[in-house]
Image 1 (cartoon, one colour):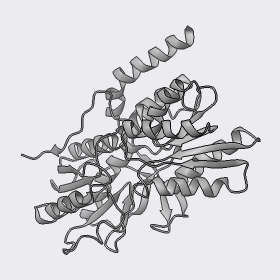
Image 2 (cartoon, helix red, strand yellow; image 1 turned 90 degrees about the horizontal axis):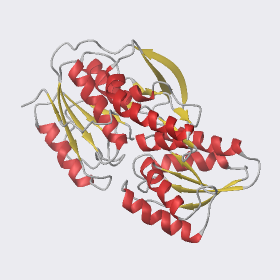
Image 3 (cartoon, one colour; image 1 turned 120 degrees about the vertical axis):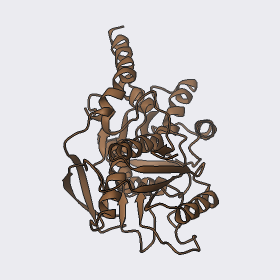
Image 4 (cartoon, one colour; image 1 turned 90 degrees about the vertical axis):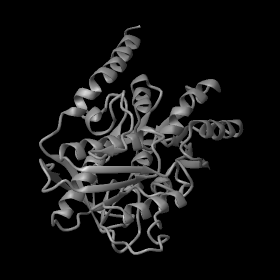
Length: 351
């Protein structure tokens, strides 16, 4: 009863306090600079960066994202909007609807190129988005979260998704010295960071007693993941399921439905409010946290710095945090999750 009361108090606090906590800005952002640029295996060094207090002018920024269907990209949106408001910028955001919206994102990119924007921030649906764009690239572009292959893109805001897989695998390896199986539901096939997460996990598990027993893919839709989870559990009972936050959110109820709560452990490749609640409730064993709100703020901040003459920043972003029971980042409500009542905003300081 006491434990249940503590959980309820936490959930109420998450709803009440998150707008207040997110409004507080730290004096400096704790980041990582990674080299070489764009590579899977990278070296990183700690970097402290104080956010800009003002911009030299009201820069106009166009932002493209794959979708706003889950709290990952909603958190990115929140960070983008907060920093644009702080610096009194004009920002317009467009979503492609899903990772399968390549044609739509290409059309949106063309609109950004043709309109009166100073720079473009792209969370791409494909690493080859710019190679598929047939017209001249006439504006500076910053990559956000996802890989974006082009010689004109020299700054990417985000984390190394291969390392997201490495960290999840290291957690599984250390919890037991007996043979284990793990099934993967990391996201759309070879889109976003799913393939990098899988590769990082598989490489790290080589030579261990942990075996990957299945790999499933689906767009970030809870109903699609329910279907994939049911298909998985109808055939096998893995010791672990590692999935995207959306897959893990679906997995909490599906595992309970199959009466496997004590047998199948859940690991999330990234964080969401429901995953955080699952950690506090003991329903989710582990989650990466790549601090998406901070990523959104950083993307706007870095784009403005480069518009104002700074050199490219290369691969830069927050350090990946590891969250599990009794080990929660104390800044999680400020750096990683949008407020509980937040809805995506598509325009800042525009008519």
